[in-house]
Image 1: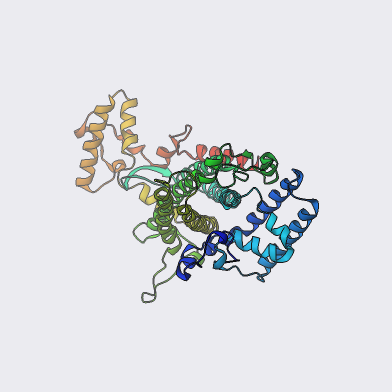
Image 2: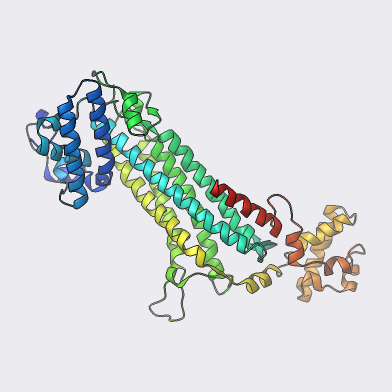
Length: 459
């Protein structure tokens, strides 16, 4: 029983299967650096408060350095007999430095320790994700600026609606990812409170300085309530919510890339390095990376559902159920980071088939709204104009022509207020350029937005 930090209470050893089932080492071992950082800060604070001696502090810090080196070199292998990363590190430290290692856990519990380690680890990973999001935004802005005048069809209900520019379409995703960045940043701010010093649930009888520990670890402040500190997993739920929404944005974008690359659309081509072929059909070039990113969204959203269900009925304070939190968010973060990396690396090589996009933009009566607007400017009430254009579209469908191809006689037969000049003036370029206002699709507006984003990235 000597290897168990809680073994004094027990007379029989843990069942072998239970020992393996109970262990979290395979998941939380990745937090070794954060666990060691937390221990350094804790030991430093205990020494400053006169709870540990300077000699013990030196032994602990030197020992932790050695443990860290052994982990990074692969020399130290964790064992499930010690359950988790925290006990593996503490056991190895004690093996190296003796009783000083046993004193390290004074005024600390694994409950506040794991909460601290998890926040430290996720803080760094969240920063990494935010960098990935910014990079992807930069890629999209550059692509949008290049295609500020590339006309394509805009869709509602996946039916041709009005012409837009490819640049405008890409900037829509820049806005989405901007909100994702803000959500992660906002959640990170709330997460950046330090549980260390809350001990098991009620605090400790030792005269600790939690403000010092929080400052040493880069937290904004200690958690204000010890019960809440050890049982709070809101930060994981928030981060997974942000990750889920971001993955949904990536999934929507993936769906469009998949459609656009199909022979039926023929709008784009993606780099060979991000596509695969078929084992039986030699002509195939499959957009596997967008498809995989689309699939990962379900996995990431599933992680959010997992932690929500884990936490929904837990009484205060810590419960073993919470061990399930890390596997969910670690997997979600790993996959989201991979998705962001794929998109950030893939999109610079996107090639737009400008001719196909332009042709598609001009079909499906995408300029119908502009014809209605022209009638309104001539004094026709909008609802009347809507009906006139609707009849014009019906005529064109019957005659298999586009609106701008309507002859004078047909215009006059539908309504005397519908002139040949109105229909002849219709072009996708004119329709796009006319939407020259904040948030509009006009090339001038696209370039203004790109310039705004570039300035923001550089500030």
